[in-house]
Amino acid sequence: MPARINSIQLPSMTPGSQKQIQWLRFGKAGARPKVYLQAAIHANEMPGTMALHHLMPQLLAAESQGLIQGEIIVVPTVNPIGQAQLVGNAHAGRYNLLSYENFNRNWLSLSDAVAERVGKRLGDDAQSNIKRIRKAAREVLAEMKPVNELQTLRVEIMKLSVDADYVLDLHCDIHAALHLFTSACDWPNGAIRELAADLGARASLCNEPYATSLTFSGVHASLWGRLRDRFAQAVIPQACMAVTVEMRSQFDVSDALGRSDANNLYRWLVRRGVVRGRAQPLPRLLSPAMPMSGMDVGYSQGTGFLVFHVKPGTLVKKGQAICDVIDPASPHGPQARTTYKSQTDGVLFSCRLDGYLSWPGQVMYRIAGAQPLPHRLGVSGLDD
Ligand SMILES: [Zn+2]
Image (cartoon, rainbow, N blue to C red; front, side, top):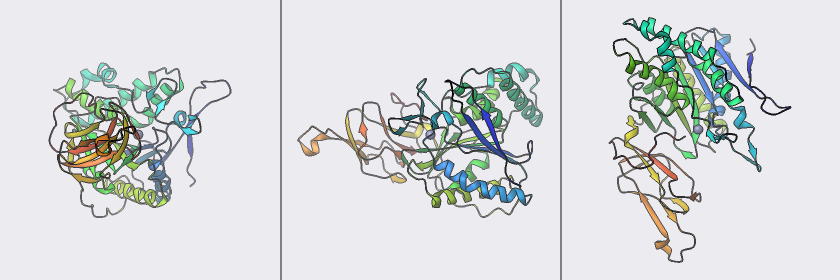
């Protein structure tokens, strides 16, 4: 059966132009488990789209054999606004040029509206609570009246995702090893541990207990966490496992990687009972979950250009030199350099590229460590 490509029309922002989001469903609407997969909310991050390009034929084949037990929603390029931002022969897909918002911020925190609607009826029956909360979240979204295309994108996309059991938001970094951002309240759920193992994640960073920044995966996880905080007497499970998957570097787009990532995702879908089949052996987990408070974020304190001593995926020691910022005008050789060192033992999982300019406050690299670090000015957690 040929797949039907569905479209969400966004409101026109300028005369003569209108954008649409295309999405696909595999399996039956309403079947469980429900998985929601999207890529390229930062519209110039294409490794996830490449993985979905290779995954969709596998899902089509599974569907034709009746193997899909649950429902799988796929949005290969979720952000046509960012896709269209071609500026001076470059693609600027990370920030909305109209408002300078990061496209992965300001997603909709629904917990207060859901609490008002059903809070008093949440009791000790976990399954009833899950149904009530999902239904209320859908109703809250249905009543929203977005006016512009970005607001509409957020509301319409969350109508597809908000009641999913699993939400995977596929991103990449500038130069990175594959890593995950998730919530500590999700991690005990075996699904994330398995996802990290199946994808070969070199680091998994956990917000504690859930993300407070309104990222796409953050609002899906925190809906349940915030309701638990508010209604302590009720039994409210973490019914949505939401994760930001950073699929290496922006230039890591190839058929070999896309095929491998698609195979890994498919294997995980089988493991979670979304697609019927025999689960393959679970690969070894490469890194345990690390607390966000243990993340060493390397901020530049001056201007210059960057050169790195280590590559993403490297295990580093506390005190090890990570990069230099070089003052281009200084004639004094080694003294022209400011060296930045790791604050922790851990994994360097992302960094900028050699030769990038550096400015005060710029994030140059991130290291996942097991031990919480003292709070430092500017540490804001996820900024993908
Ligand atoms: Zn991103």
